[in-house]
Length: 415
Ligand code: KIV
Ligand code: ZN
Image (cartoon, rainbow, N blue to C red; front, top):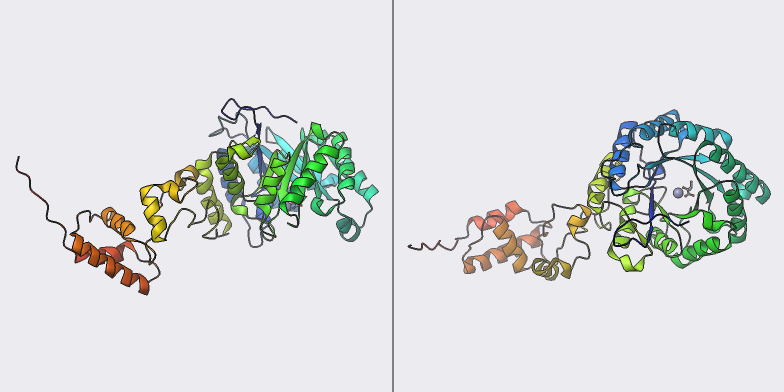
């Protein structure tokens, strides 16, 4: 399905729909539990960030989840602040198993939102059908069609996910998906539920389904990848390059087990390599880091320091050679400017790998711009000696070293 293209440099490209599931799959991370107020705060931030579809929760799961989805639908479903470029409010989505009670409960919770979506799912792999659901393929198709038909009678946007799609028989998948398209599904999401696929495999699966499902041209295909092999972002990218136009992602990659695809990684890959993708994104990248910090603080899920894009070290340089390059031209060792993703408080980390240039620069920043050269060399030796004893040398340590260093006497010029 072609999506209206915006009037910018990428006008001819399809828009990549960002479906954020931080508050649903992300909240399923072991140890994470957000209260309603925290969920609303995150939902509003995701609206400003430019998310297109927000999966706000699983309304049947508990009364708390139902109320949270309802409040998000009311309070974040109408927000337009920061979304001028997108032109529409965020669609609010609720998850539902393929059963009438789940679907009706989701529709009720979503009621206050102007744009609503029900996301219903049913496993399709023989493994899940036999051991988990104890039903055959025929019953699977019947339930999927019934669920989508009911959901479509309640809301305009219906997404269907064949759970464990990556381990399902592709021909059976084409059959189920064709039937749910007939029943009114508008988005087909293809989950690599257990993070099993390799990128080429996942890309080929999306291509196969788009080419062989009856009615595929009437719907959007979506990726949903888990990170059990650390391949979630690579798989998602393979999905986009093979025709998917929606990606399901979470902030910081939080989610079940090893997590979901990290939004910041996919968006910045598209942003950094516009020529490698047939899509454009409409995320306000400057809000990526502040959103990451908010989600990390409220969820209690710390971001690993070397995490791509949003890790504490992502824009820090310790090696002397790198610091020297950065001081001369940041592009020598940075492919994304920190400001582009909203990181503002960057500094060179001074440690035993730092060189003279970085040390001199920090001295200047600390108010010691005019140090006698011989004294500077001695201070640098003292600094290196301290680095051997301490992992991180602080500004206070440097000031202490500099405290004894004579500065070059100011020259008085007679006018
Ligand atoms: O990973 C998965 O299969 C899911 C479904 C509910 C879409 O999260
Ligand atoms: Zn999932």
